[in-house]
Image 1: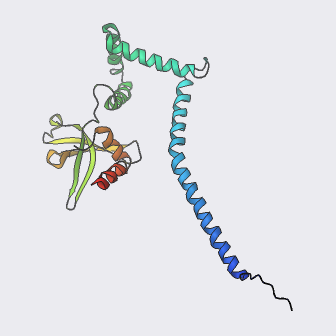
Image 2 (image 1 turned 90 degrees about the horizontal axis):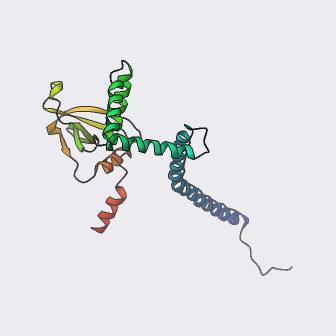
Image 3 (image 1 turned 90 degrees about the vertical axis):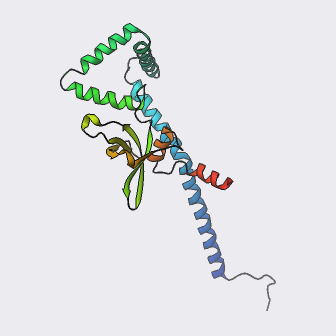
Length: 217
């Protein structure tokens, strides 16, 4: 009888070891895939949004080579903005056109609403530049971040109250509430842009900076 000098592990043990090794490998690959999505998704979505905006603007001038239409639209908008703010004649013409649109029945409501919304974000009359904390419940205390849009509502018969816009998280919407002045306090640790990012991101933005600050302490 010949006895082999080599010993082999039981087949069952080999099978279990291979199973757990493959399972660990699959888990590592899956986590790596999710990490890749986390890294690439913001880049891909940003690139897609830029492409959609570029393609939409460029298609407004379809009879010119691709890309030139986008450049022409940007130059035209810049020129109109420059003429409407730097030259008296241009400002007078645009003011007259603005006055005309605001007095055409039906159109005036659409035009004035769009103008007010655009003016709230850009231009010299920005409205969302005063972030505030709003106490919406006292027991227990619940605070929301918003933007004070009007601090004097006397013309509405509510002289002791102000209007605050509360943006929704992960959306381009929100709603307006009317509160007493004593129920708000100004946001002092963030700029208006940081406050908007904090609100729209659901409070996620700023966590990394806060963690770093806490670690340093």
